[in-house]
Amino acid sequence: MPIEITIPRLGWSMDEGNFTAWIKKEGELVKAGEPLFTMESEKAAQDIEAADSGILKFLPDGPQAGDVIKVGQVIGHLLGADESATGSAASQTAVLASVAVAEEAPAPSVAPVPTRAQPATQAPAAAAPVTPRARRRAAELGVDTSRIRGSGKGGRIIEADVLKGAATASSGLSVMRRAIARQTAESFSSAPHFYLRCEVDATALIRLREDLLPEIESGEGVRLTLTDFILRAQAMALKQFPAANGIWLNDDIVKVPEGDVGLVVGLPEGLMIPIVRSPGTGDLGGLAKQRTSLVAAARAGTLSLEALQGGATSLSNLGNTRVDEFAAVIAPPQSTMLAVGRASPRPYVVNGKLAVRATLRVCLSVDHRVLDGGPAADFLGRITELLEDPSQLV
Image 1 (cartoon, helix red, strand yellow):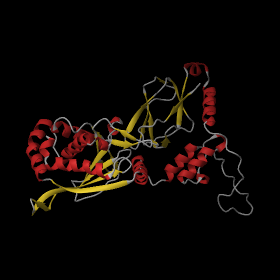
Image 2 (cartoon, rainbow, N blue to C red):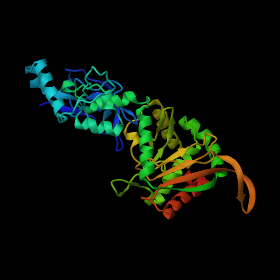
Image 3 (tube, one colour):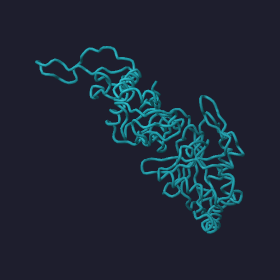
Image 4 (cartoon, helix red, strand yellow):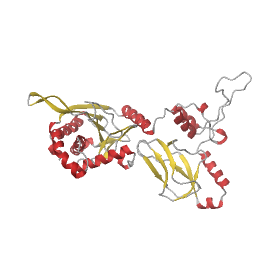
């Protein structure tokens, strides 16, 4: 019996991806655990391993490079050794075709409808039959099935045809861009955001960074940045206020045991949020090295799926721009996102007197399902205290 090869879910938020290429050739023996094909999710490109062993057989209407593929979609089969050895190519194809057709129930007959104005002497062209799944998917994606050529039995339009049509009709958006659009819209509509803002006197923080910079640069070969201090402050505040280290998942608050923090990395085609592991512990040089490695991997497109999973909070730092202050959208299922603008000289009251100090304006976006105002204010307040007295971060 042929074993279906289906598209796995690479992360909690993944619904679709782009098919890149088969690693194995049709007719080749595949062993469980071997890389089978490559696909690109909204987060990273991944080699997908075979879950079973068998002889690889492609579907007649299987995905091509660049095609949009959905989680759970069948893209091929693995045949048993006896099927490959004793069955003819024609019989194997027949078996696979029957399996592929069985994925969708036959569509009911539909009356012929005209797709465009026809001369009076011509009969209206009949619309191609559409399977129920394909019809539902077309309605979801706003795809006109009359413009799609069916690849199913008898020219029937199946779900894969609708997905290809949607990709062709799109404006060329990448999987990442579509995922960002979908996830930020879902986050904003489902997570009740509220925002807490404050200004941080960064004078001591900037001075400490300048003092440590030569030592860490010579020892680790990387540059220490304010981002490293902020990541550490977030992680240390999580430890003191564990209520902030929770996520909203399946209508419940789930506590995250690790003190990890996501870091938003801007890319030409969008952004990624690799997870910095335990930035509240260890030395600052090791933290700077980990952060540098993650950013480089994100920009090179080589992040592993594991590097993108975890954390209840993230940092979005636009300190290298002219932005003074902004509010960020929470990355679901996380519960908070800390947005930090540039460090800049500003009027600031010190010991009751007006002075000019280098300050950071920070904004914490909070999911009200997980945190109320008081606990969220305590969490942000602790981050602020640590940044203004950075000796606690060393």
